[in-house]
Length: 353
Image (cartoon, rainbow, N blue to C red; front, side):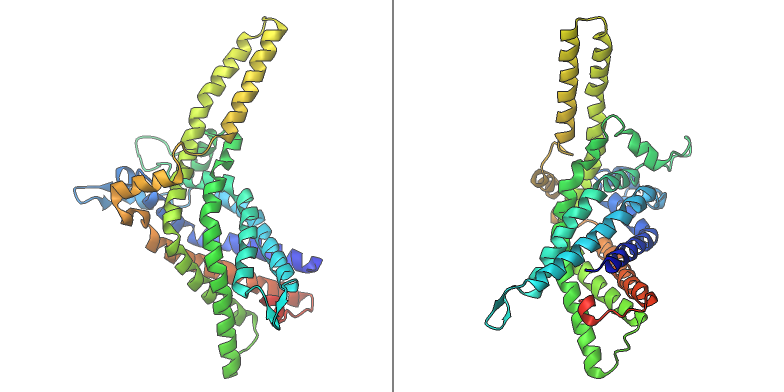
């Protein structure tokens, strides 16, 4: 892949992420609140558990952290995805005159590897975002707070705890992208072939963007419904990360007091205290986001709400993903074509596969 194409991928991916974050973020906030363990306590009232107004307040809480992180993470995702997909296609072994590895498998492998890279960048922002979405600013008897800053305070003594949700995020995104991208590529290819066969293909930026948006939205909504149970568990794990980090501050503060007391002690005692502090901090970083495993959380949800509890927010997530994926990949592909055309280049169908 050329240097120009890599730059195009980063710019187009970043612009696409920024556009989607601003437009569909409120739906993501409502979905998080629906899936939270405190949903009934915070967002319903009355004998019929009717949804309260607080459900729809502060729907942009935490958006700043996501915008900052999704710009590099989306660029990293698309660069990795396009690069690995191209490499796999170039080195796909031949068997009996055809490729040994089918295209859907190549797309799943490329998207899976890209997702692991993206999640490493996105995890801290995702943890901050989901906890900021749950900050209650609906009370009129107290001043409003900045939800993002309020959440970050809980991690100030151990910022590395922000990565505790990496496994949960990757566990949700890997099966999602493994399902979405093969469907997306197949639907896109079918629509293009249909228009070519009917002689209605215009090869314009608008057409390419619309085909990509429809394909991505359709594939994404199907994948979203299928992976909703994983998303519900992921939401609870990430919400638990802030509580876990807050609990970590207690022993850390205790260790800090011990360090102060160590002043005036012998050098051996001081070094021993410092060593214990380092070990405690290391254990804190490695600690999982929740003391409960994913299966245990899923079982608790089923025991409390039944199977439908694992699919809470599934319809909203499908709509959010249809809009988000459609806009995201539609803007991304249109951006690539536009940037290439500005340099006087034309991306072929082979480049856009």
